[in-house]
Image (cartoon, rainbow, N blue to C red):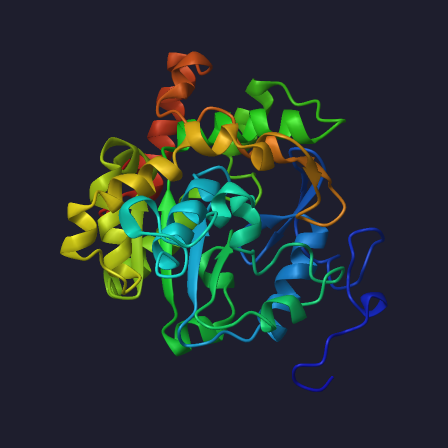
Length: 331
């Protein structure tokens, strides 16, 4: 196949029927369907297909910025913040002046910063991403080692947001209950899979470590953020985000409380109540229409305390501590 040529859907695994390229991969019953272990990462069959296409055919640009997250780690919030910060010269916020209605008031954050691997690329070619003007702000759930090789080669900058794993498992379980009609896992069953590392794009510790290690080696290329820290001091972290995106806030903007306005515009309370986010249905993955409101539940730090037993919490803490041992990364 010629470089850059999009393969036919019939020639790649779709997940709807068994394909020789997926047969050798380890499988396990996942949260809602069979998961396959591809290069150390648990994915669905269609997701593997999408990853292969993205690695082969997505064309990164040197000025691309990737927002990388493990699922249910504040992806929607990060998209909103990064979009507001990066585009405030065209779409002023608060004291920044005019500019009309801000896109975050009329568009879902998930649509303003598209994923590179979603919707599944055998159903939705990459041409839509190719057509975007530079500088592109893109997102991904892929672990670092599955990113297209050219991302590292070109020095594309990456913003990584992680979250306390106990909150992640609870958020994931609630999310799947909401968006999957036939989801039947009890919380303790979902928890057992999670601590075994069997969750979509998991294990979570490998996902975090991949970006953490890259951040330690090259902090100018990877900004590593923690959800809990951002919630505790959003002003500080939005300033840090702006500096990393090469659009630091000016003294005039700081004096006009633009940073505070960005935080307010992108807050859970503000975004979750907007009609574009609280109503309607969209299919952003490929074959799974979901309510726009499903991306907003609580966004609270420590909500796991309402669901996990002390024994469960200690078990997950011990596993995370062991897996991250010696890395310098802690939760």
